[in-house]
Length: 273
Image (cartoon, helix red, strand yellow):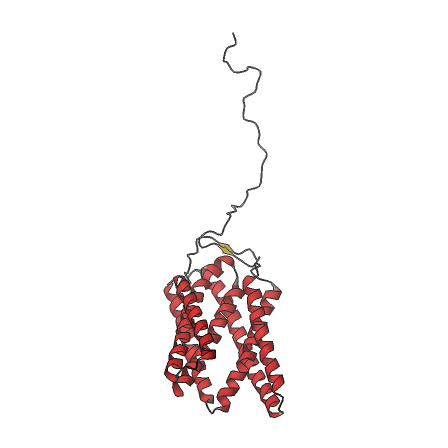
């Protein structure tokens, strides 16, 4: 019978193994706090979500708010320039050109926003350019509204509304980033608020609201976009940070600021009527 013994002719000594270079760990999804940079080798493990004191999180936030600040400046310049151009058209009796400006701004506003938000690539020259297309279109859309308030002798309300929007936006931004509070849970409530606002706008097309109710509705719109400012600021140092998508973060913050300004202006105007 065969004995269960090792083969005496087989060398059981440790065989040399091929030397493979060390492979980096590749997680299927970004880990908590992982920072994926702009292709310049930046990568940080251990950054706490929402912790603005972490260098990688702070660097990303600076990038987002640099985009936001330059885009806001572009929007304000576009609003001023388009308003002056529209005033010339009105003086010439060319109201069709004013309508064309407004429609062009509307199309550019929504088209650029949707492309930026739904583009999978986190950053590209096209995506960055569309941020400024959005800013210019937003400014152009504001021109008829600004002209109306100036013509009605309420030009100072524009300054007041801009002040309210600026103080509110940056106050909420500083509060959210410094405390690290997460307001992403507001998403469902804010969606419901938007739907209510759309319903009221549609009703208002057929039924005239009294002045007091109009003021309340404008105040509701202001509250909704205060909520969106908290929501999107929380996402800057969490969702957008992990995705390394500074452009999408900036365009949403710019949208929030513009809508804060519009509803502050509507609210102040409705209160005065």
